[in-house]
Amino acid sequence: MKLGSLKEGGRDGTLIVVSRDLSRAVRADAIAPTLQAALDDWSNAAPRLNALSEELNAGHAAGAFALDVHALASPLPRAYEFVDGSAYLPHVERVRKARGAEVPASFYTDPLMYQATSAGFLGPRDPVVVPSEDYGIDLEAEVIVVTDDVPMAATPTQASGHIQLVGLVNDVSLRGLIPGELAKGFGFLQSKPRSALSPVLVTPDELGDAWQGDKLHLPMRTWLNGAWFGEAECGVDMQFSFAELVAHVAKTRPLTAGTIVGSGTIANQDTGKGASCLAEQRTVETLRDGKPSTPFLKFGDRLKIDVTDAAGASIFGSIEQQVEPLKR
Image (cartoon, rainbow, N blue to C red; front, side, top):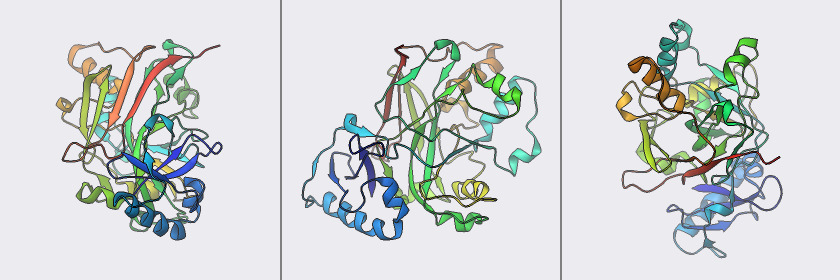
């Protein structure tokens, strides 16, 4: 099934079930008022939501309406936790090579992750608002999963059973602020503003053979200002599966239902697939030409992130945003 949230009903939106082709939806607030409420009681809510999904896809759901993506909030307008990884090591290897540094051996056996911003997520058509272009505005096209309650010290095999939803995120990064923050030794803060989630989150069974080994095996397609930017394969060169990432986060603490875990920027060894973030493209250019030629995002720039099935149909709906200045 596919789940989303309308921009109504309060800060956590109103839960809806969305048809497989993303054309129709039906309110699900009689089952759970919000997606977070559904996740809090997933064992009871999921079967009822799935039944409603089947009715909707069969054309029998009472109260169904045409879906307007602009009316959608993020499926989870806010979450208790968003922990993001860097599971695609070709990206890490290139970035470090460009500055003459080696990748620590531990990166190949122990995931690199950080605590991201979760107090609020942008809707799939909401603008990316930034105070200044000088901050080095970048997109990062990633895959995310959402868990139910995960016990402390869960193994990867156990963690796999707690992955309930899959989606996309534009993990907005302000590259100009990152070096100074990392130099302080406490990690990202100002350099990570709010991110945007895909219009819907889907249960893994919706993905069929594209979900194997707790990885999404489809290309991540990105466009900038209408021009193709990349289509890196999500299932290739991913050092750690989502089950391993979830288990890593849960090593010393239980995870609350609704926890979001991100893959990190999708990147392949094959740079012919393009890039999923500007920093990656700029690194490729630096290694090839001695300096980057692709600028970071400017006000007015437009981005699109999408994953499609074998027939070319969007699975999660696309994230389409414009970069705008903060109005003071």
